[in-house]
Length: 437
Image (cartoon, rainbow, N blue to C red; front, side, top):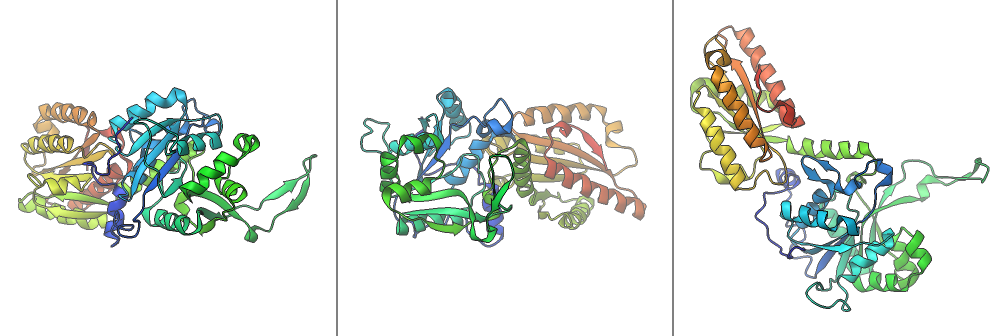
């Protein structure tokens, strides 16, 4: 079990950085508005049968992290959310504690789940009940948000709407327009009738409740509800007389259900991580020129590059960036890369997301670098192997500074394409290689 704190020394979520670039101050949306305690219950005790894998989907891994860790981070980064209760199956309890420890989740308490979804949610709500005694009990929140552990993409502004509506109305929930027409069939497998799609909505997560209302509803609900029910809003209406305020949510509220959804979630995060990079040019005229050309070319790939002559000693810059491109014409620059990897490890910058470092060697002669310095290739490979263990992906690209303008422009364009692909794909299989542009 982890202690419940509200601060963390972990690096920012990249999704926050995207919002900051858009002029939205992530983390301050609810400041001064939410002046009451808010908690979250994440039911995560399911087996994920539809996924078709032996591992429950909430524990499936991509980018070196289980899916549930991404969902926890979504709520943990919001300062006005105080506690996150994660409800897992008994056999997954130790695994969940390991995830909390490894990824430094600080607001989480783990609770054992039940045989069905509603039983698991009720177990999570009971963690705040006054009937709980001893150090395991948690302060009772004013509002509790119930969310699926396999829906990692929900932003603070929408959570704020759900929370405030729950406080005012007693219950609130996300909805989305139906994508397909819903039909009823006969017992023989023929069409009985269809519903008018414009009159109906799909119920989604998150859902928010006054704690007393939803806890009372679960105390009063029937065994049939516990066994076969799926809708928390219905329980609040039926057993507490509270009609929920429905709020249309964004497209990002989708749920990871099938294997293809895991790939889609990975793509969403990779795309977000690849929106910006730090370009380290050095001070040599040729490397500065190449950096300027690379900056212009990568803009066509929807990537923003911040240009700096060097980053040594600039820990603030290192803490805000997950992509680095260092251009150098000197062999000694590998030692600078080594120092950068060390600093990133000390800062825990690669704890939650893989960091990419691309070392671009500008070869001023027609003789390729790897022919002049064959021993350097092994040095690059050794360094990349050590870096990969720290979740830092190190790639090398060699570009020859041709005196023929057409060849030089072609090399720069190819360098841009390779760089964009490496940052976007984050494929560990290509680390330690010295690619040719």
